[in-house]
Image (tube, rainbow, N blue to C red; front, side, top):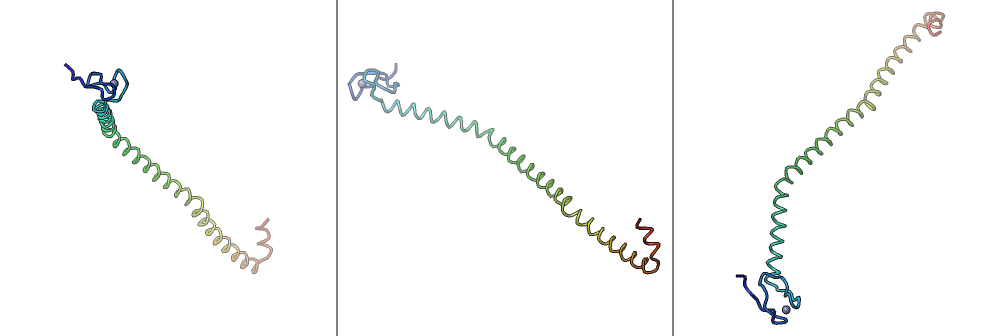
Length: 121
Ligand SMILES: [Zn+2]
């Protein structure tokens, strides 16, 4: 049979498994502690079970986040190259071409003025 304890407050006897005295409501510490430890144990078990699948999913999530970040960075870099580097290269090429055309037009117009005017129109 279950152990009986005497209430320190009212002196009534009650089941030692009870957390409180059923007569006066005084907390019975050993049982309360046991219940608390039991709850703690439950929490620990729950944490453990969470920890068992949490690292994998968390690790995957982190890996996924890093992967997305890297891909985004690569895409942004590619876009940056397209926006800033390529036009300036193209611009430089065009400048070179314009300069060459200009130099050519000067030399052509210097030799023959009428011919260059016909080309412009
Ligand atoms: Zn009592």
